[in-house]
Length: 217
Image (cartoon, rainbow, N blue to C red):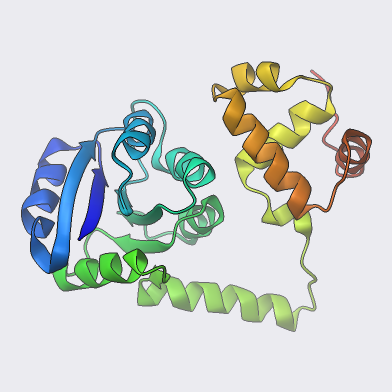
């Protein structure tokens, strides 16, 4: 049984998805959340297999931030973004945040069901248009001879943690500035240092200086 958490700020949408998906193909809707904060809390409480995540939620944390934090705290929970944003900027950011899939709200019901089943098995699922855009970007980079930059592999939150930490702020202070938990800060710091192959705080500060991140207000 695939345990599914639905996250969307519209109650009507949540009800429709619950009616559509509940009980089908071994899917059990175990909870609903109206914003990112509630999604993070319910992910911890309910331990779903898959989170069906909207991106634009005006109250509390948005879907992008919630995706990132859930994946940091629960790597074994898969996140499928269900959004109206047919925009490559949102697509790339969602993948960078840790989403396993990206599907549009106007997709046929059968495609949504297929996406959930694929993601629950640990596979990635992108709409055909999203796949085409990702491949196009990759091909363009290869043609232009661009090399990969480890800094670009960091999420926006990891970049923020990198910047504040390099400026000398303690984990608790960084957590207060970014409105996240100390545990989440520690997780981001550990991840970014691994991605950048940094071994110590001096290494982190030196790297931040090279990237121009040590500008003070």
